[in-house]
Every structure is written in structure tokens, then in C-alpha cells.
Image 1 (cartoon, rainbow, N blue to C red):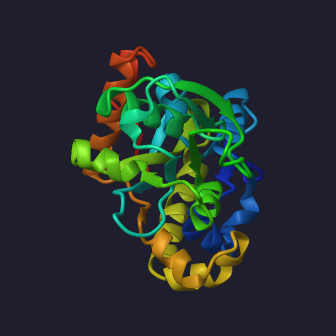
Image 2: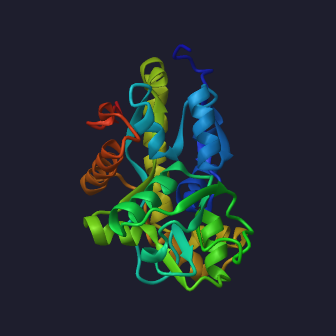
Image 3: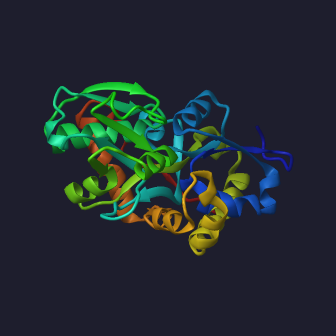
Length: 285
């Protein structure tokens, strides 16, 4: 693909309400004419990115971690959380028993996010010293009596939290912050290395526009929630409470958090040491 006016960028956008502060302003951008938005779960978008069906997208940080030679991370963009003692969060472990009682107990892991799966394994095995029996599947509409504990993310987590019979509702970002002192980065804007090299001007324009959308959306969360809350459904106030726990930048603390998470994964044999140091693309031209 060569730099031409006809070039179209294929951008993956996670189909959860968490993306609304970026995606809603993007819908109003005239720049979207040069891009094709593809929506889906983190796992579905990861496969499309790996298969070459996307050029870039807000996907699991593990996509970069698994194949750092194929990707770069766009600067200034993420979907992160520091955890909240009150209100909803982006990734939850719902459990009928305390987490330190989950050793050899069957736990359902949401199949929609590889990052959340690895995070909950680190939390349970490294922080609580238990090794459950993991089952992968769909957490939406799960029978609360079938599994002792369930990992759910995004919109599914919000819906379960709203009507949950689970005694323990553990915000994973909150536990991560308590143990590491750092925020947790669930997703970054990952771009294929070949697109970085062959479409520098187009990438720079997209990058600038995404940063502009980030600033516009996070500057008016209430308006974003007025548009988006009904998809859960949840009240506008609850939606604001949720989205105010999410951060969309990629500052030094969040980059440190990424390195810390990758260090855990390297130690556990999940990714190679070549995933570090991080390869951050900031060529805004």
C-alpha cells in the first residue's frame, strides 16, 4: 500500500461503552471518510489485526506483547483504570466466596479479552496464592449458580454488577493498584508495523484526530453518557460514574504499568522478553 489520497485505514474499535469518549466524537469527524471502523470484541479485533484485516485498533495490550516485532503502540492513547472503591469498573471477578478460597475451584473466564484473563490469573495466583480450575466461555447471561466465580469485562461486567447475586464483586484494576501502586492498562491503540512504514502521513493524521477525539470526549463525559447509557441499559449518572473511572491517555505511569504487567507475563512464560522495551510511535509530523 502506498501513500495516496485514496488510502483507507481500517481501524478496530472495541464494541463496548468504554470506547464511547473516543468513538462518539470520532463519528462527528469529517476525517472518518478516510477510515473504516470495524467494531467487535477485543478477541475478535485481535484476530483481524493479526490476520491483516485491520491496520490499527484499540485492542488488548497482549496483541503487542505476543508479537512486538509486528506492531507499535500509538502514543497518548489507552483505555486504563486506576480502580475504584465505589461504583462500577471495567473488569470484575464475581465470586460466591473470598478470592483466597478459590484454589482448585472452577472459575469461568470471559473469552472476550486475553488481557483480562491474564490479569485475573496474576491476581489469583500471584497475589492470593490460589490456583483455580479455569474454564473459558461466554460470561454474558451466565447462570450464577453454575460457577463459583466468573470473570466478566466491559458491558457484560456492568450488566452482571447491576443485578448480581455474587457476594464478592472484585474490581481487578483496584486490586492491581493496591498491589503495585499503578493503574492498569487494558487496551492501547496498536498499529501494524507495515502500516507505520508505508502510510506515515495518513497515520500521523489519524493519530492527531484520535487525540483530538480523546480530549473532546473526556472533556464532556456527561454528554457522552447521554448518548451511550441506554446501550447497557444504565442511568446517565451510573454511566458517568463508570466512565469517570476510565482514563484514555498513556502517560509515564501507564507505560510503567505496562512494563510491570509484561514483567509478570515474561516471568510466567506467557510472552517473550523481546516485548520490552515498549515500542511507542509518536511521529505526529
